[in-house]
Image (cartoon, rainbow, N blue to C red; front, side, top):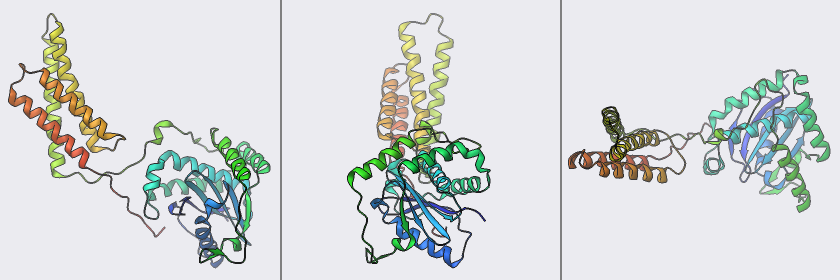
Length: 336
């Protein structure tokens, strides 16, 4: 039997489930444990970074930092170090795939459904790969657990009725204890985390780019793309032609060549901004529009007034299409 049975990623402040593994277990005890996990997720902000809720057949482990927490249901035979190693792996993967803004704007359960496949792969790895391959990472986790033990609950402690725990006193951590726990976990997360995976998990700065999905392309948007590509092609052809046929490149001719090539690059970048989301895109759109307008004004004499107006008009149309194309809200799948 697998030691890690179920895992999910939740938002700490309200317990909203963001992603979860597929549930293959339907015993009464397991379903009851799932119910208690959902209840515990609503109260994660009360606890330090790591904790466990122990039951007769299953344990719930959780690990949180910032606004993201990872939770897992494991069998009683699963070592705590392995469970927390698994949870830290999920935390690294999830925070590398989605930024805090994207997480904070999520409004529906399981908004990051595509991350489920990552959870499944990590589960399989920890369930079926020889633990000796993860010995170094597990030893580090065990040392941290010895230094700062996770808070231990019972599954009965997770029951809440009308927002009040049934006959149990709510846990209040002293500020110094919470600070100590956070510092311990931050020190751990500052290191490169491998956990013995066949392909080590490395946090890359470029992977922090959020995976946004844009609204469908409209007919007017397609027209702006076609016109933008045509303007880019005209600028490129004229610029190359001017550069090739300049026997003695004067200062003015260099300026004309740049005035063709800079709008060419700006047109291509406008196409990219329309097709893909980019941070601070309003500033980028304004800069690209400014480059195109200044370049065409500089070319007055090599282009007539109608040609200049055409290029500037296409640039304004493309800028409008970029700014009006919004992010598409991801559809949830509550059948996970």
